[in-house]
Image (cartoon, rainbow, N blue to C red):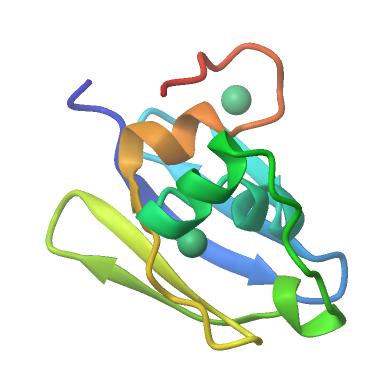
Length: 105
Ligand SMILES: [Zn+2]
Ligand SMILES: [Zn+2]
């Protein structure tokens, strides 16, 4: 697990993908939509658990900013001013769509 650290984080606004280069050399391209749909904050989790569909606008999946939280997670700020999700490195890695990375809950 020690290797699950994003070395380079680079949002590609044009194709709406978050490009991550990990310390173990793996590269992930995670769609903004996936990040937003898998937002781990309490409110979004609750909405998903109760199958409430989230009202989505173009701004909802517009990634304005990202930041490192300590040495364990990234946070994202979305165009609709939602920024509560704390994406731990392991969780983020699990969102990698390559088919080889293991999803974590
Ligand atoms: Zn959320
Ligand atoms: Zn992967």
